[in-house]
Picture 1 (cartoon, rainbow, N blue to C red):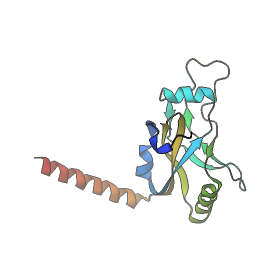
Picture 2 (picture 1 turned 180 degrees about the vertical axis):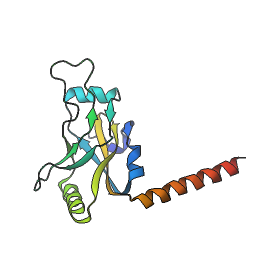
Picture 3 (picture 1 turned 60 degrees about the horizontal axis):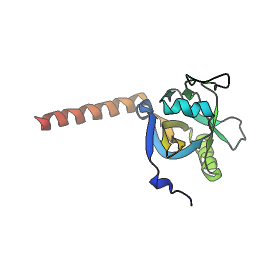
Picture 4 (picture 1 turned 120 degrees about the vertical axis):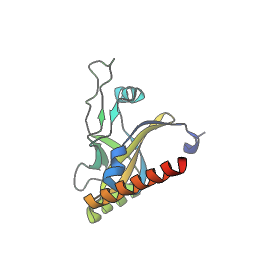
Length: 158
């Protein structure tokens, strides 16, 4: 009997808050990730950093997508088989989704960034965002909008 993925308990490990500030997120994908044993143990302790992480293709004509610069700390009680903290890790997506992402990145100059990493039942999942970098004036506009929203909430609270 196959467990439905909608019924799995989701436990957030880490979220990339900076991504929403620096990028305009066009589409969101959920991908599995290939990990070693000590990496999973370290993730259960919450020892991960999504800052400076991005997803891409290792080779130009490759149809496998990897996540680079994802820093998972070494497991404290690990032995000589402990993992390398910033090694490239393979992501698990459908071939159709990989080809779609590859076309978007090649044609429109978009990037693939991890938005969050979480446990979905016993599995570790990564939420990927197909993103376009914000320009300086885009960041200013979003900051102004946040400030006005804050002011409105303050005034209605009193």
